[in-house]
Length: 470
Ligand SMILES: [Zn+2]
Image (cartoon, rainbow, N blue to C red; front, top):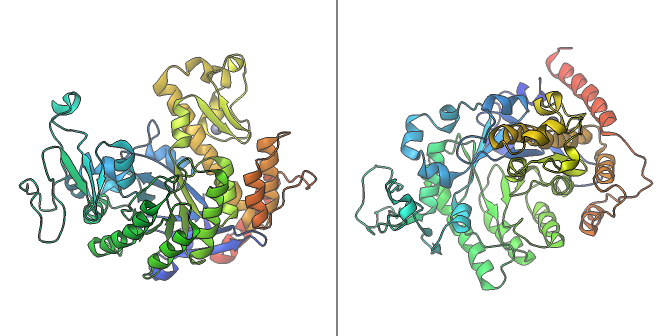
């Protein structure tokens, strides 16, 4: 499929203009644009499926391309442990290792440590945690202890500091992730976008700890910048922190904006906070961040959250939810989720979504998927394909509606499809109203098909004008 963005010459842009806004909504803060990465030009707004360990469970990289996935997310914590930075460097980076030619983003590794591991201690130096391959853990001891070696590959005596301040394995069973170590691993992985190591606190935490974490995250950002060795190929994204406190969010943004970056992330959300707090922090953060740069809201994947966050001016999203819920037999559709384990689907001979062009919907029925849902590998694979296709289609519909300035109509129709006769949650109506989209039942229904065909016509004519082709 031809995309207008691919005609941009890769060497014609400075780092300041890697992001081009193609069209902005005339009502809300939503916009659609192109972000030029080292490996690929991605269209925004964009959802990034999570391939934790360098693969998307059950879905091949070639299939992800067919589904129009333009950028994937890899987890630094897992990849740093296995296969590890040394092997990834030898393999020429994760792109080559897994044969993925499009965009890639890696997280810093910090979030997984805080959420998955025992004995996490956060100091100014970094995040210290118990090795998951601890010799004191009988279930993993036999596999041998894994550790993150320093860049020279030499083992250090327990607890010995390095002259450059990089942490080393401090004892047999403790490991330390510092901003420098996170950059070293992410430089070895070679993703187009790398996230700074931040001091993560739960979104429901209150009190002085939130401020401490926010300030420390800014200091760690500076250390990440210094340690980053491939700045011309990999973009470092800072993360706005500050919990649910708007003053702290403001201070976080001004600390981050002391230097210029290609894009910015909004972190510390989607951790169980009230939806009313969630949208207000997203809204405040996108208003504070530069308009000319992409904004990435971390950990967002529910369809209604994606639509609302786009209206609030966010451009990039990631979440494990679509593929995780697929493995539990749940298929995503505009009206919500279909739990194909339920008996009601046993004799339903329609596809998950008759309008979906994915392999699963083209070839298999709800009845068949219900029948095989307990055969985990096959069912998870087919369900993951559909759920990734659903996320990609949703983002495409959002982009297309923006291209023809019909985003408010799309949002109205989407929310009507999603909630039907039920009341639309007040946080959604409040968030949308705050940016000028007022949902009313009487709004003229506009099918997304008609928005798509308008957008296709506009895109074709734009492509023709740009390249001289018809
Ligand atoms: Zn499908």
